[in-house]
Image (cartoon, rainbow over all chains, first blue to last red; front, side, top):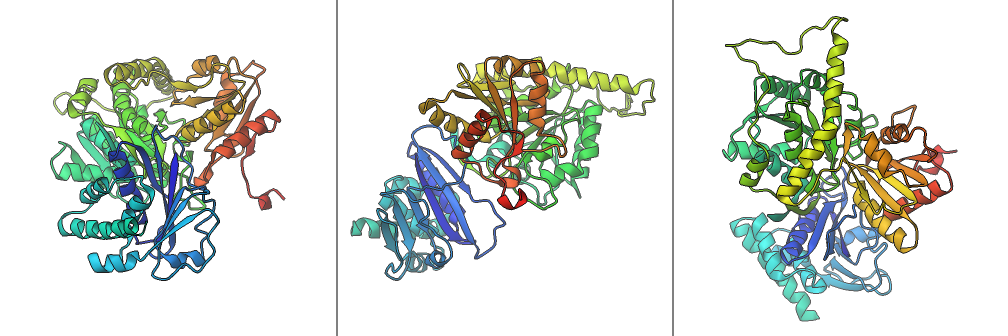
Length: 180
Length: 385
């Protein structure tokens, strides 16, 4: 079983990202489970959402403490929240940042820094970074196919909004694939 | 068809396929996406039901009571304080022998205010005469609704049912669920045939006054009907399994119990985490098993006694507390094992949404081995000083 923890702020679409990643993984033939860290959600407050992937039925219900992957939607969170806590050796951290990473990262964790905010502004016209980061996650982790991700986005969003979000995901996907 | 969807939406889909004729709900926190999704289905004419929006949970269940007495299949969903406000009507539904089915998305009761999960809400309606079934995952949460209608509407039962599943932990989780088609649902659940109903052409009364010379007989008959469900649930559960491959004939269900030395007993979604913890403990050589309680009301004491007959100790995980006494499940287990020498340890756990990890389950087993039980698990140090 592999586990993903998404760190964001209320309003950034972390829960939606978790759900769509799970949908994409399921469509790709895996078992998947997505759920939020339940709280009194407020815009701007730190939030978490979780995804599990496995090739068999997932029974475990606890939150995720030792993730294989993390997605950080907002790098200002790193001042307040230990986003790397419990990360597994060899884990992948996908961090939305426009600057170079200037804080300590645990040994053995691979960091993918991506300017998802600029991508989102360019492709969607809004600083909503979740779909771009989903694209980066697909490229970096290999857990989900881009085509499955595209389908999941289309199921959730209609028309122009779906097209723009897929473009954001694609740009981030290509950027991570290109850098690898 | 296997689909990945949110627990609440999976349940709403199943409820829709149960063809309720009247749905009444009060759409305020605490509520769930279930009634929201059903309202949409009614508005889109996907299901042929009357959707009654009301001004409180008390009215929601009262509307269901009236509609059920008039001969309709009815449905509501609630949780936490919402269920607390239905208290009086719950007893009336059971007393009038109305086969109402209601989803209880389990959450804690205030004060202090908590929106999170435990099972105090439905457990607090333990003595109301409603059958109470608990689901481990979203598959079971959906399937138990079909089962609940079958059992509640059986003319030898005629009692309302709670289908209980853990708030947030299941209701807000996306996971794969095999949904029935409308045809499959219809093949299992026939249209509602009321035993008797309000009819202006042939008037009868429900819920009348009973003086001391009759009241006890009514209560006796409700109790007999609830106990009869101990045989009707397995029959309906077996039939579900024969049709769709998922067998719910067990009032309880064992996991790796065959040679277990220590048995954990639990209800609801915690059973999944317990099973994973058991696999790890088994790998480390510990003979641990799980007895999952699916039917809490009626309580299957004989099945519990049989399932626990070979174990040396029992550790009960209670997501509720009968304040001043013990957890409600542990009380039942002790009663079922009365006269045996097997120690039963009670652990009050995961109240108000506190997370439970595999290592917590392993720790509970260690505590039981040390003979330490009847405690709140994982309390902050400051309250113990």
